Length: 251
Image (cartoon, rainbow, N blue to C red; front, side, top):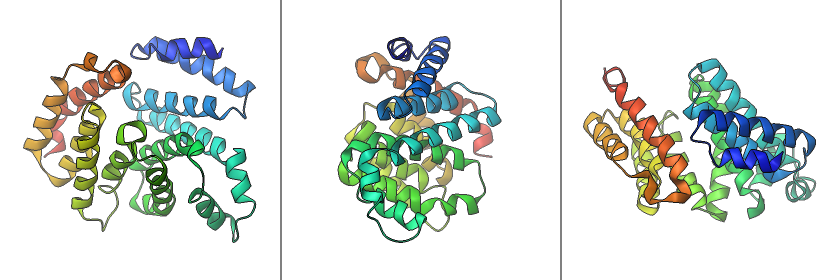
């Protein structure tokens, strides 16, 4: 099942292949609930389905929730996490944050897809709910930055760039700084530019920059970087979607 799931995941630009990857990796993960890498892959598959293929907002949110729960469980049941958690002091919330702040690099992938699914889930929720999770998300991402700042093509910087447009009281200049860091370090990953347009330029009311950045993405050649070709194709399609919504986004 794992082999079949990986095969279909490698062909994920096709929606049927992605659904088949979901099917086989889910079945494998149910039989191997303690397999950390398998759980993280499944969380990433759910994120990919939700963000790039799902049109129904309720179903999309359910996929993000499933993804964050699977990755959270994978992290919190990992031996490297439990070893630190058992000696941490305080109530359960404090112990969780204290443990995340000390976890080793082995947990970075689980932390990233936990927080990434969580953030997308929270995007459609009231400000109060986003603020309730702010400390957890910041602790997770700061830990990733300290261990592996380039993870998933500057993922932590891209994450903070997006997040700080959704939290009241945070200057937009912080978002811009994080996005510039992500794009400057990994310009080949089109997601860095799409996220900057979708979150920063839209929030700042920079319609011309929004349009220009997304046009640049659409006109890029996704085959130049085979290792991320699938993601770049996904983000080109998302750029086209955002461009189609441009008039309503800047009313």
